[in-house]
Image 1 (spheres, one colour):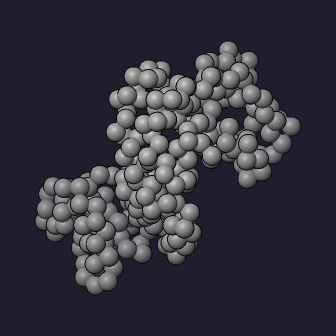
Image 2: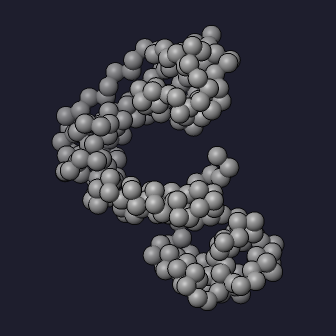
Image 3: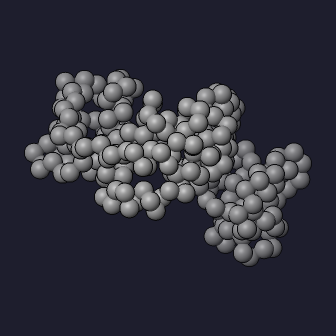
Length: 250
């Protein structure tokens, strides 16, 4: 991974869009869709700029010297950031990027996802937001909250995000669910350094684990499949609370 995906709130913020023609208009529509206020390059409040000029080099250098983050159409070498292909299920956003390698590939992946992700998924996110305080009262411990929600949102769970009607079940789930008990350490044997060789179970456990105890020979590419906030510990460390994985070489 060479870029860190971020969702930058621009609602009500000034955003520069420089240029004319189809590409500039596309950027204007994108900014307006996100609630941004389009301004010119003389605006000192803007911190982000989209440049669609025939000769963009001078504008890009000048704006970057002012501390403005720039995106230059079809010029990755001049850009501080790229724009992903966006699947909008407000407030849920799924962004597909290729680091500027191929906008066409990102678009086709997004179109595939369009057919998989329900159009009303945003209602589930809104419903979860509405019970956030009650959720914290029900499970004061953050690890308990995470395990309860992971179980609810898992495939076939009561709040499965790909199932119809999940948004209407949030309050019933909150009133009825118990936090899943933390399991003891789970041992996994890793036979390959290639993360694509992980089984579905292994990938799921890596994505959910609170801590990982691993042999020194486990590939960094495998460890990257774990949550970024999961603890990485040597094999002889004392297992902490929560879901713990023990990774050994096969």
